[in-house]
Image (cartoon, rainbow, N blue to C red; front, side, top):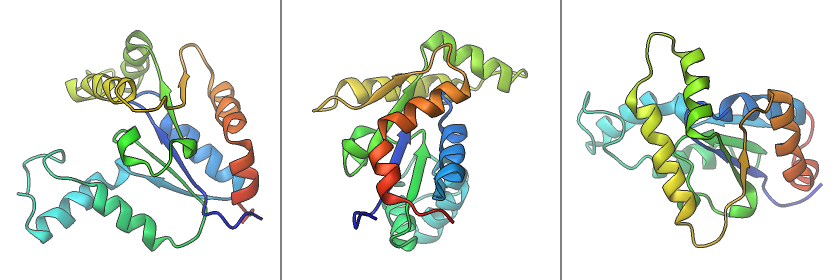
Length: 174
């Protein structure tokens, strides 16, 4: 087994399939799944307690990266698959360990309409712009996978193919 600590980062906008793919990869490869988005409110509570955020002012008004780093350090050397909408090229340690799942705007809207028939929050759609801009302004080319028209199995297979050596060398089945 490799002595390198396995940290696989999956980014992309809402509706890209990040959580689904990360969860399935973690199960299949015996790794821990860390969902940044699922920790939004606990991070907000920590920011309020630290005095760097005012409760109820929204989760995007403070820097969550130090809290994410602290959470990941607390997991120790265990292999981890990390996913979230705020994963951008500037906040991952190595682009070699990261991939972005990118739907077209039309595909994102279609997927979100299924998930949110009551209406789609503008923040979900704006996230596509933020991620897209971060990817295009990165100093080196980040690894992106266009997910339009793909099934979950096809996306899972493509991500596994991109990280075959990392997954094989960094994870021990639990």
